[in-house]
Length: 530
Image 1 (cartoon, rainbow, N blue to C red):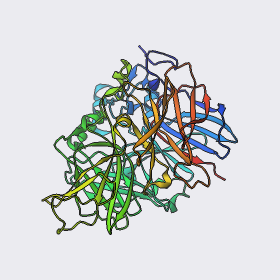
Image 2: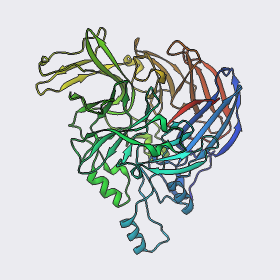
Image 3: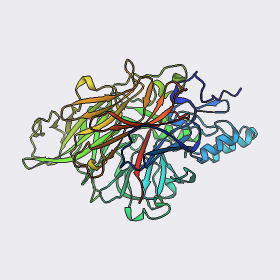
Image 4: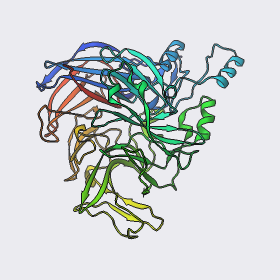
């Protein structure tokens, strides 16, 4: 029996109801849209969770759906379309899930006989190009990306799919993150992972000089690489930090078990069976000199934590001593396999999780030598509560400080900043809270100096990751607006683009559109091209 839901079916939470494709639908604007705000919001996320009678098992598996709000002359239009990856086309052609994903198994064509299916399992692999997490932009080229080995190029005007790219067709890189960075000169940076007996963490780059090409991702190159200390269990990473002179990787206890990965891939089983959490392992910060590509020889360690998202990283100095600070959203335990991320839980009405993420700052002293005193705190910065203590084995153990007071922390994720301040000392970041028990879903502006925050929420509404857009001519860090796509838990109420004043966190305007849209993960704002 086909159990595919209609968009207005109330039996499931709104955030997993299937999306509706729309082309250039006019939005109803309320309030005052800033006259200077001209451009496009591009966001990516899972758009449907069932194909025929089959159901995806994990939130990360839904077919990629890109939506766009175009803002021009105070008017807003909406377009939303599925990314027609090879995985999407295969599943839709057969009206069932043959290509699964992170938490869903894959299957061979049921129309084939048992011998053909067995031969298919042994000789081929299911498509894995369902890139449903973020959007990367390189001038006129746009890509949907995820934590994995593929990217998909699409046309940002009509949201038409162009082509899928396997990273292994370009480089010996099997995995890259969903959170690239852009250097001050425009270069695109990301982290990559090479599996094998000689496993490497790679820093990959596309030079800005390639952005004028039709498909600049084809010029992806390895900028630096670090040999993995445990090649059969490399770390999982989702993001990293980039400063003017350094790249910082969080080597965390959450690992890929390579033998399980190979076995599960051979048997078309989901990725979740290959991820382990080594509770005895500490977190290690790997620091790479951006110019030389060489690893800084200091080993920085801390209590083992799980991190999806870095907030920012920056360099600072005091009394002739140099430091690196990295700010992160940390969890005490891995949160890949709990709460509503597991869709059977969401379908049963479990829409909260038990995770209590905290925003933490780690400070790493860079001027460390064999003569540095053991057992003493090496952080000498007024007002800084983070510590770094030299150990007998020559490593430096880091204890972080919290970026928020306890009453403001514990429910937030998906942090964003004014990206002009990426790699620089900054004050504000913006985050969202969803799937949290005992409080409404909300957005928060966070101040890492006062360690306080101010919130926006509306009863029954679930906002998306907040995206900061700077006002032209701004001289202050928070002079701009926040954009967030908001879905309503009542399916009969409109989806809307929320526009907040980033200083006051008060609503300036919203643009409503009649459509079905589940939760999205990440996105970007692009100014209107002149």
